[in-house]
Image (cartoon, helix red, strand yellow):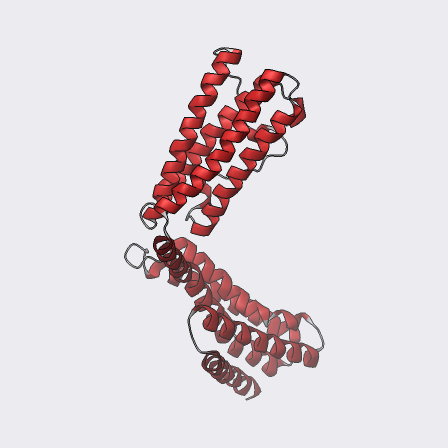
Length: 318
């Protein structure tokens, strides 16, 4: 990689052209990714891409006038200090707030790039050129604000934000919560049954690991095969399955790990404390995202957990 300070004025302008081309393509890709669910934001990014195309044409005219027809290939990933932006296909499904923040950071980065380039230029005409580009980018930021206001009035933005929240709950929170509840509650019986039946921490640990991993695989496949998301809006089935499976495994492993402690009494007490913490987290998630009253959420989860725990203890002690 090269340092920005090592670039010539010609290379800086070539880099500016490449940046405008890449930014325009990113905005087009974002618009296509959002169009089905968020048409207002898609229209905003489409207009921003058109603005980038206008800037690119201006830069090309200025470069041709100053340096001729050949433009060296210089990209921002070849220069130290630039933010690395992943291709849009790598961050699917698109999160509305994430792409909005990404666009704002791109605008700020481009403005700072032009300011810095103008500040280090020794040629008066080049300094003026880069200063004009920096001013144009400032105007671009104001234009982008106008585009947002036109395509995203308060009611449209509120509707899209609400839709994004509901999609996040359907695609992430629900499968994750189902997995966490299953892993935390269903594995209580085998773990504590093995613990009280054998009085051996290592045996309880092995049973807990087997139950946790097995439950994670089972729940992951069950969630992924439940529906393909095309009618329910729950998103890609393999992503939901992965989230559900990992959270199921995590929920079971949480109260299994204390049994790595060889002292049985200490391990059991710590495992019970972890169970209480897991049930509290589940209750908080249900209150936070599922609109369940906090007392009701806590009582429901605690009652279910206590039943399963008691089942494990009774079977293990018999």
